[in-house]
Length: 553
Image 1 (cartoon, rainbow, N blue to C red):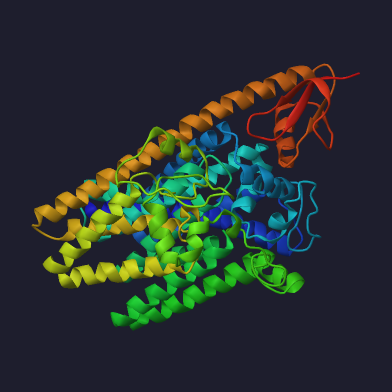
Image 2 (cartoon, helix red, strand yellow):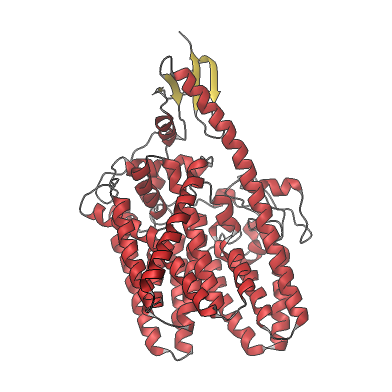
């Protein structure tokens, strides 16, 4: 039963990860031969993912391949349709999501080829990010948009990757011989990273990065425990997706690959080590040079650095304006600790210091901050800091009760922490979403110590606190986003009613991609460069888009 559950989880996780990878690879290869995104891309990618699923089912279930292939594909299809419905129901009301993520999605769907076409020059002033940032999430969303005609449904991939990270984590935990219930609980806690949760209804990309890094960690553990060609293949797909998520992901992926290779070397698994090193290098080259030709190669050719505009001549620091002034005298470890033991707060360009609090306490005002997708201080939730303290206690007790086992877990944590602190902005949760795994892994260490009731009790306390933390964050974000969506949809209905008489003047300001919403609603409009002067203006909720419902004559 345990082995069957593990293999089933791995199959589902592999299928769900392979699908967005196939979408990205299909689109990138078509860009290379000068074919823009079309409605057929999704079908081609789905067929490629199905072929991968067949070989995965044959590797995992050699005697029952057809049964498990059919079941895995059916379950994945049902999940995807569910995610499609949820993603399409909610409008993205985030600033960055509307300002340039959706703009990139819109332009890709309209035929822009980032490999060869001239860089975008958009009226919103956010072209630099669309042109030069990594864009796997936007490409996947654009392929889906081209098929369905609904730009918001691209958010389905947020949920796909959360589900993939859950199933792969479940497989890893079963491989570590945790009980059925324990494995499910901790896999859910790992997958429902607060960064993924408060970004799942928008087009920010850090939530997808949280899920991808968790996939890499789960696969690395599985490769260390039970190396196989299938696992290595899925690991390469995770690398390709991860390095094309955002620039910092390149460093994170490199640290995790190096950590896995080092662990295999120290365990004298030299055959697996060589294959893993070669596959990781191949995945990096494929991801950065071929699939990631834009931005990594185009940035180098046009601007002299693969990570332009965050590095190279004329580089910009996008974090410094939002860094609390008190952090500027701290090192990156100190600022991170202060952040996660402080009251949660949104990003601000005028914050002087943070507000430390008693662990495991919070207020309604603090909780309300998680309606936003980029909580800067205490961004893993109001209870996260307290779980770090309990995790430290577990580690100390583990050193006393089982030195060897604890050192193994601390070695794995060291890899995670190195990946976190190579980023000087480790205090900002969405920039280092993998930090969420630290107290979870420490709690699992505690539960792995046999016969130690005190440590088990503390570990379950950590799990309970983290689970409650996720629920609080999810409630705050989903309930507020739903309320804002109701107000936006009411405004869109008003605009449609007014447009029945004549096209309404609309100013999109920073959210130019919102024209896709007007097109999908069938609202006739004419764009004006500034908010129109009229007797009945309507600014749509959290969009910066103003509609003139009653134009002046």
